[in-house]
Image 1 (tube, rainbow, N blue to C red):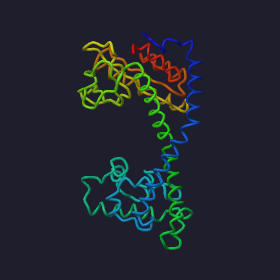
Image 2: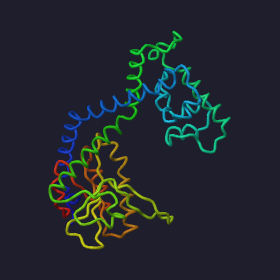
Image 3: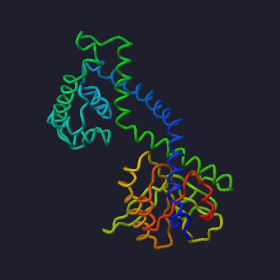
Image 4: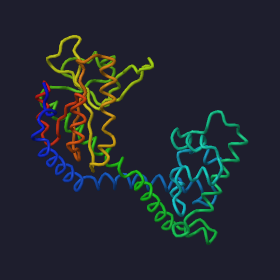
Length: 319
């Protein structure tokens, strides 16, 4: 039985309430999430500057030992350099840059002489393009005062956080959503699954729940992959062979991105049904900017939802 996907007459009212709910949270809590990340990032930048002698000596050995420092180094230049732009300017292998930034490693098959030369090229570009208004000591040919280094670190941290502001806010909001769901379930006698207690999502004991659980599905080409599910809940009244309820926590601060990403849930639903049949469900826990176009798309795929501003609707899913 549908809970919200067939209540078209109240969709607009719910959208308005959800937008207000999200905006209230954003105004009061999102700045703290951003500030906390900024403080942590500033410390990381200070550490990275220490490794590179405050951007005066970017040695290949340093980049080898700390490959994940590259995104920070790209934010030290004037103007900041995008990943592909760095590849073009330095002439290095795209595989090298992507391994450093995504895998946080050196390419395993790259020959050492070539690797060293390309790391030198990266270092030369960064040192040459270092922002003179931030790294004021470079024009003096020294390594800067403690105050200057700290000030430069905060500026670079701001650039880094600005580049990933949306994921920072999204992660903080998701944590808050899952905490709200946890408190709601525990108040009704459910308990969080212990580590190693269940072999897979089908063997979870009745009355348990787990967050960020991997659920295996089969693709059209026959391969098996795991899809991460934010919340998996085995109902108290479940019998052997019953599927747990699967929920995806979704939040959004504008309408544009939700409509761009609405196919993601439909794809997961299709993969789950192809693997486990029509009795498995995959629903949403929503907060923020999800308009009627988004809701209609998900409803057409058989996906239902609970609004966070009306979390008590979880009861209608049998909990």
